[in-house]
Image (cartoon, rainbow, N blue to C red; front, side):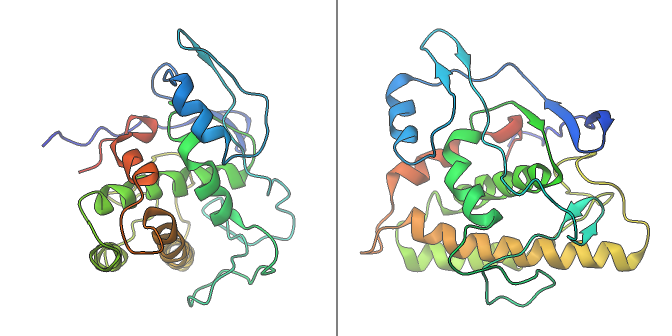
Amino acid sequence: FLPPRLPPAISSTTSDAACLISLAPAATTPPGLLRVLNRSLPSVDVHCTWRSSIAMVYHSSFSDDDGITKACGCPLLPLKTHIKGPAPASDSDKADIVDEAITFFRANVFFKNFHVKSLADKLLIYLTSYINIALKRLESCRTLAVGTKAIINLGLENVPVPGEPGFPFPGLFTLPESEEEAELLRNYLKQIREETSGRLLNCAYRANGTPNKWWLAFAKRKFMNLVIL
C-alpha cells in the first residue's frame, strides 16, 4: 500500500473564499471520455484536446451564503434528506449541493487544480473527495446488496473535522474555535456524507442491481492526487 499523500495547506488571496488548490498540472482528458461526460453535464465553456487540457472546473451555484449558518468556514447548506442532522431542509424540487457534487463528479475528478470562488465550492471539493472514497469502496462490490453494506460500513466510520487526523484537506476549512463548533461541523458532514452515499448507490448500480461501469470506473481516479487506501 502507498502511504497517504496529503495536499499542502491552501493559500488564500484577498479573501478566505478566493483561493487556488494546486497539486499538479491538469490531467489530459481523452476526447472519447469527454464526450461521455458532456452528455451528463450542464453546458459550460470547456476546451479540451488530446494533447493539452485547458478546461474549467464546475463550480457550485450556491455562492450566496448570506443567512447560511457556518461552522469552521463551511456553509451548512440545505439538503433534500430524511437523515437526521443540522442541515436545513431544501425544496424537494430544487437541486442541492449533493446533486451538484454527483452531477459534476465525473468531470471535476480529473482536475488537480481547483480555484475556489465561494464557500460552497469548498464543500463541493469535500464531497467530490468523499464520492471518490465511496466509489473506491464500491469498486469490488458486484451487487447492490453488497455495495449497500459497504456504504453502511463507511457511514459508521469516524468523521474527522479540521485539525484532526484523517481530515483530507488541511486549510480547506478553518480550525474550530470551540468543541460545539467542531461537533456542529462533524454532525453536518456525517449527515451530508450519508445522504450522498444513498444517492450515489442509485448511480453506481443499475435497476437490476448490477454495477454501472460508467460510474465504478471512476474509482480508479485520484481527485487532487489524494491516494485512497
